[in-house]
Image (cartoon, rainbow, N blue to C red; front, side):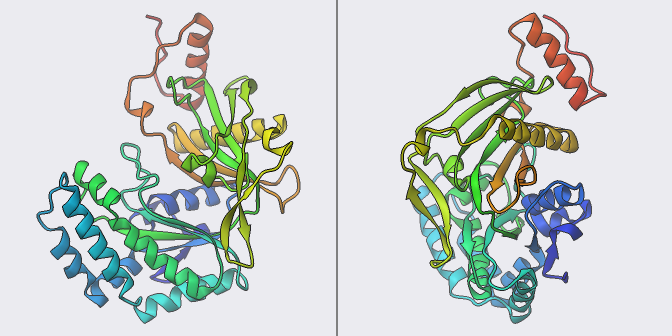
Length: 357
């Protein structure tokens, strides 16, 4: 079910970026490419614009943000708090609220969902907004989804988000916000995979961090994750470090939210992934790098409700934003030099050969 204000992932095209933002555009791209992605829909930027214009919020935002000093954190904090209050004092326009409600109800009765920001300046190759806006997990019921969509919009104007845009000369009002509403995964394990070594920039490596439960514990640094290094071309596990993962984040259906719970011994020090799962995650990340034609930062999960071999899902894939902006790291030995050349050819067949120096 699609309309001006909502758009299912499988109906998002490459022309919809300005309507659905970086995260939802990526989810739509992966869905339409046949990647296993939990279903959902985007609340479009048209809905956000309607919220600004039909409630008078646009003028209130401009009043708070005009001539603000990005280095004056007291002023930023004052503006951010005022904007949060103003957002939450307004109801969504009736047409927007009804569209969100209809799209959610079409997914199933009180289905637990994740509600995530998807700004138009988010997940770009030269600037990542990862962690700048809010995410809400295990949300159930249309009324709660509507509230969390509004909270995501408001999170576009936290102190951190305002300061980030000021530092990077990104206009505040012109930055629009879509929101992803996506079926929750009952994650046995989850984490992130980088299609290069985040410490060295080596593109012959895929580096995976994993922990029990939902992957937010990995992203937030709440736990020290298990770490796996995979050789990209030969698809071999080169290294592993298994950590003490003392807590996990899981869904609580009764509370309608994600909660932390202790991980008891010996599970806390057991590997969160089998070798087969490590390689499956690596190959998923590798395929997304090939599809998107640049190094990727991939969020993934192993769904406990799906059968083995069909339970790996992609939750997000964004361009890597640090090493991709630098010259490629020099290989440290002839083998690495040769593998870098092979990897570069496989991931970018039109690129020039890596030359020894």
